[in-house]
Length: 195
Image (tube, rainbow, N blue to C red; front, side, top):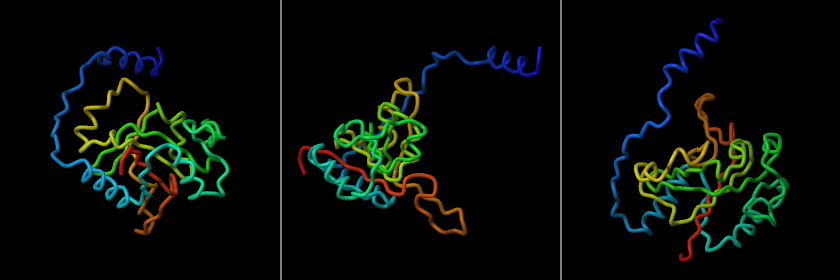
């Protein structure tokens, strides 16, 4: 038996059962009025260098995207077939100009947005595109991460990521660089039936 086989056998014998229950998540409800929560969510996103717009319906999305980035040609937007022209493959993701994804949850108190593989056909789409547009329904906003994790069932998807703005790094000579290893710009569109 090779060293590799010994290691794999030991791992297999000591692997915990897959039906382990997750620990309970504490929930701390907020008494914040809905409108105040949306305004705080917008503030936290803009503090993270995201562009935020409120929309009433999905028809406004195309106009906003084409107005903001009218020269971009490679668009991945499966929920907008009239705009979508680039599939989500690893190779195509590297040439994307704009990707439009649907968020599952938005966290008011920190501006984080949860996107999983139900919306990301390929996980690299959110990181290799130049411009990322995230659609979120106002009703999918929660007060804090405790409430968000209570809504997330990790067995419903294979991949998920929190996004709160464009890629940023300050590693190089203490200078802030935006778009170094991800989108240059993130636009969040909050959809509601009332403003």
